[in-house]
Length: 228
Length: 327
Image (cartoon, rainbow over all chains, first blue to last red; front, side):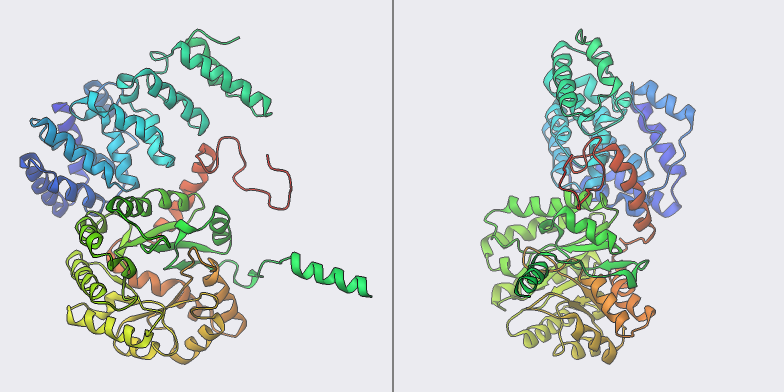
């Protein structure tokens, strides 16, 4: 992750004007040092004011490098503020586990829409990944489109860490909300029997209602050993 | 005859025709005070159709008093989260102001705790001011939390949106302005809301922004509003609906624009009081970018077809209201 942090840092910094660079450098230093989460919360919230929301122009090579460091991570379509927020989260010192978990949890509990997007995007790079299962499952319950996108589309965390019922919820929610199914990471790896059965039922329900069934549904159904 | 007459009456009772807003088609509106949490998706759709491109939802009293801090926290979170998203579904850019309303300032035990969480929210993206704050009953507790929040706004360099009381309005309005000045706020960063013929002159003379709420029966009617603009011009004047859980009208701003046009006000004057002035006042927060009014529309289009809870898979984004068939 150290490589990833410096990669993202270089992308973020080349997009900032000198004033914003100084601000971020100072903030990141205090985030690294603090035990409480005040500096993190302040800088995390203020980020778009300092960075703006432009496309940071990530190259294909940089995307590949990110993916090498954190399997499945896709940063290429992130805005600058999102990228910088994730980077800032990576600066928090995880040595004191309770303090670390608490400061990140606090960000979730008072987050606005774009902050939630950044927080869920950061799940694959946070320390103590096993501790974020509940948070991720909670995020899947969100009905805010862009928040769901951040969890469902090209995010490697769910496939890597979610337990089966939560994973199955994610896939179902993706169908239910018309997400692009092919952008879910780890579909093949996480195919399972229970999911196949749920999908079969769902397909029948849709047919009974005279609604269409996505072809992807049949593929996943088969992967899990179900289907016609 | 008798029968004809009665059937005509039936028609009049049951066939409610929507207001004709064709004269203002193509104009854009900004409603700087509307409580969308209390409104339906039909309202959002009607607002978008009528030309409302952006709005501000001030934090207020929900009708039912809150009894715990978490109720406040969740409410503030919904203003920067769920409600913002709901609005984007209809291509309307949603901003909010965050504050402890005057009524609930009277629950002092709770008010103290709310003051502690306000700093967590006022610097969030899209928070364009501290509001709506001010007086209701004009109690000592209201005075205390009004002052504390003025200090908060000053520190955060945010505009202030002031709710003026229904009862003892004139004195309450004067007192709100006196206190704001006493705390060193620049009147140009303070929007005094719910004005009427009795309060407007002093508010403008002292350099504050004067907002007018077009709200049936209890606040301003829009015919009176036309006269206000004729008399005072358009400088630092803005119109809002303050539509909420009561009998109110989320189309009050476009309807007022239509009435102004009908009564001969210029398009430029209409634009100032139904769009431009509100943006000028609240953009002092640094949180309003007019380019976002367009962006939210684009997100909306793709968002709709990608689906979500309101407009779920396969369903057409727009309900055919003239059909009894629901598919």
